[in-house]
Length: 279
Image (cartoon, rainbow, N blue to C red):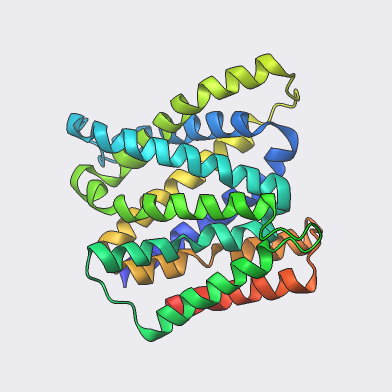
């Protein structure tokens, strides 16, 4: 029972973080939000972990995992933010949070976990939803730019979350979450410098909001790694993948994002698939 509770904690943290991110990306650039959000969140998690006694030593042997996770996280965040900038949260988050699909497929191949028929139905609904949301009928392309960015982010994070469970258990989820976020900030920093040198950024100071994004994201990641240790991959990814349900509703009713019938069908299909993964 404790595994699903941690998964719901992740759901809450990430829902709030994504809503703040929507606002922050309107006032600052992608790399600004990425660098400062990840840096503040990473430092905050490590300091909190040390204060709570969760981090008692620095596991030097974890450096190879930190480099891998930092690289994957940097790419995942880049495409995640690009997707939000192009299509908003209502249409992109149902795709991005469907990272349970590649995670489940990898679990089937490498961990010999066998999804149930309902879970396979859920995967089918999710794939149909991605097609409906992403199909660009205006230019007759198979997928528009925002949906493609969301799909790439989903695939990257599917690999990311598949691998993060064992290293987190071995070296501590607080250390892994905090250090990979600092690593992400360091990898993203050169892009921020180039971005600011090539064009002027907006001057609004939103460090508190950006820092909150990083902290909530990191806390959600800590809760997620705890959940993976206590419950099966399918259950945990199914619960956390329902995050876009809440964020999409806020995107439609609060941010007034426009959704046509085909896209609405895609959202409903994706949500139905995510629910089937939880059952």
